[in-house]
Image (cartoon, rainbow, N blue to C red; front, side):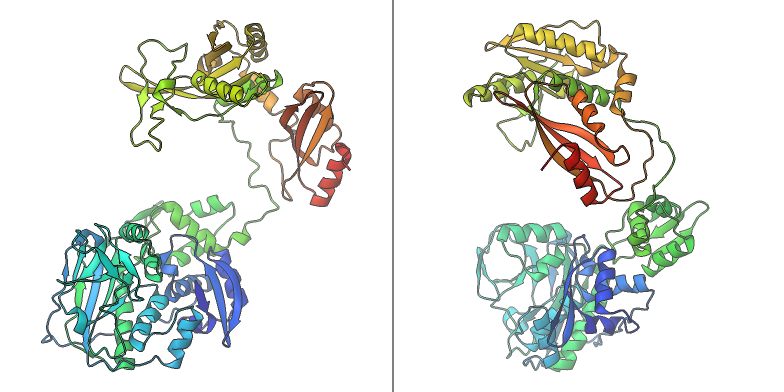
Length: 627
């Protein structure tokens, strides 16, 4: 989106900020500046509108944002369409009722079309749009100014009997204004008369009804459609235009009268056109903005800083929100221009971004309140189980929960009444069933290892399995382990249970393809252990304070250590922790262990805080003896 600074000042005559300051401030409120350029004695701000903010794809919407930010008055123009009641009605029909949100149209005659004036050519050129003729250029000007696409038909070619409807297969192809042939598909929204398609609604106009210099009569229309319909049509036909880009977003139906009146006024002025019909206004379902319950204090709570109530009220009013103050909250009705404001969180975001994200301090802790640990105990059990199995030289695998019917295996601990769950509308028809066991995934992984001739290693997976029982859909965390040696599998599981202090669980293995598999319900194991408090404390080993003040970013570096024999990861971590100043080390972990023929390679990842990158790098090099 390009914004010419001098044009922006026409809507904000009191604007005193420099283009550089405006660009920076627009970035801070969420409309990212991609740079400033000088062209034809004009300063142009390039913006990337990332959000669903169709209102900001025009000067009008950007000016509204800056008016709120700078507390300025928006110079709102006033235009009135004049026409006699004696003028004929336009015989326009809207057959695609649910796809057309609003449509305004009027017929003009005695048009004296001509090349565009210099100011208009320059405006379009700065927006990378070629000048065609004055009437067409004015339609593009209004689209850029308000973000509202519109279209002009040559009425001598199109006739007055225009119909907005979906393609039922009668028309097979369409020639666009630039001469491109587009193959049509059923269901696309179009504007046609009885004989031919005149335009693809919301996307592109047709060559046979396009306005030219000799055009003397025109039907000018401005319409908003169902955004989903426009997006689907644009994708199906592989046609992307400035109009479709805007109409894919939620635009304001209540802005059409202003934008349309402005357009017709300009055509009357520059093309000496005369109004030849009554104004056609199709508006079947006026949009009613929903009321939102808003708690004033939440903006401060979310931001972590105090935002005065006076500022909050002023901001919401500048956004044209209607406010009704209740005893403990406000009822807010957002303006129709802001179709993206639907939740209380949306209003909170508006208040915070206009107050200024940059005002939220980065050198202070958010809170000194010690919060309770709400992590489910089973997640601690899962992490401890993974660490214990990795220490026992097992690899972890991750697999899809969807499997083939031929690979369906039932977990050994499931009863015979359980049934598999078949999915609908699956993204891959070859994998329609949710797994009832992790063993099926381990078997598949073992086959892959054998195919690739990978050395025999034990491996495991922790994940959810799914099943039906007595009409209920159930799921639980499961642990499955694979090992080639039955004796080693039994020994390792016993060591795992000893580490986790699990007692009273029978160890039963399954043999398939000369390998041994075992699977447990982790939620059952959780009930069999009293070690969860110790596990939680173990996870927090080395953490001196619950609340840590971060004055600078956390920096991480990796280091590889080669050893001739295997060492326990926790022992190694403790060893290297002692070599790093405690006030600089945020966390130290081993992220990978690789066994070659003669050595073990341990990959450490160290996280440093409250120091510069240069200092962290120096400490890291000394601790791990890196060159």
